Image (cartoon, rainbow, N blue to C red):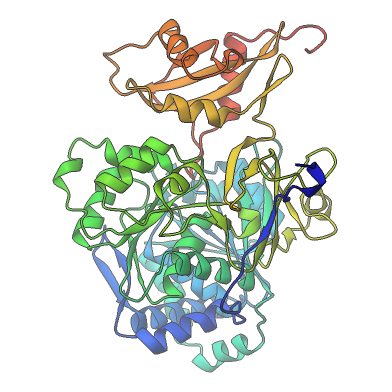
Length: 550
């Protein structure tokens, strides 16, 4: 076929219904009016529960408390805490006020906290007292002098501090909150999420009500959520996976949020699914691997599950197949996206066959466009050709907070968000992610996509998890390293054994030269493997860069 007649890697999501045009607060009010008596929120660790009517009251109490502290439309309110019911209350309370919620990563240390407080201009910070080994109160005191905008800190779980917020709000007439809501537009910014940059300081993706309410809603629609669903969320709220695909997707359908634990715990997650009869479960692949590998996995009754989402990083086919077969999640979905796109652009469908639900990240969601372009020229490539995935539509962020220059680097003049991900669009419009542009290994002039090798190695009986990275090499420019976690540490795997296994199915230039056996991968708090750290570690151990930098 003449290349000019080949179908291009572009598609857009048709929809039978329009986008939601209201604010997050208005959407919650609509749900309360329809499903007031249904359960809305369960915190498994404490046993606390709220119906939608009770959730609405609790959100209003927090919103009035923030009003009493002088918080108004456009003010930045930070939240620095692991998953808890108060996180949810603050999320919806700030949305009702028109304040901008700034998500602070629970793993941040002092210098990162100071940067975000200063860069976002946070005036009120809602914080946990501590989390794991972090003493949040002490860290906040260390940085307060350098953050003049920070007027007040409210500590979750501290009866004086949190109780004081609610007591202050009790003196504010409810009509003041109603007056605030009348001034809000769905296009107003409502959330800043800092992307975990591997170099330099993180960037604050600024998202509107319209961005994240619609994205949560359409993800939930694709999962066929109704008021009868109960969704277990072990993924962090500070990230879009928890607060958009999770909370907003759930409340926009009248379903129930189930918080299994403050941070991911495989046993707590499995117990929450069983005890709360959850119908849906979210997680990154490493979470599902941990749940499937739990010694007592077989003892939990997971028969209530029907669906869920696996996302956050590439989903191994073998893991996906086990989730469907052993966790009763026949309708489990893979989502693909990024914080800057609110986050989801593509998603697999409930009736997709196993091949589509394991080998792709689905097709474009309603009201969104995606295309695959040549990274050098920006021209849309024919279907079946690798290139950079770009997305456009309601979901693209307003921009990076107070950083027009870095916004312009990723959002072009036509409002396409350039993801930095290498993708292939199949003839049927389904998308495969083949790696990051920066993760692509160029070995002796051949482009090697780590994802392809990883998927193959998951089929090795001794391998539980694997990450493939490039290591500098004098002769070939880069060589391939496989970093492996074994199913059984007592059953070793040699490099020669791995190479023999690979040669049966992979081209010679894709066979890993190096094998590194690890107990665990370096991870971000949101569950993504830090490949950059693996590369740096292995480059020091094995890498040799020629003077020419070849």
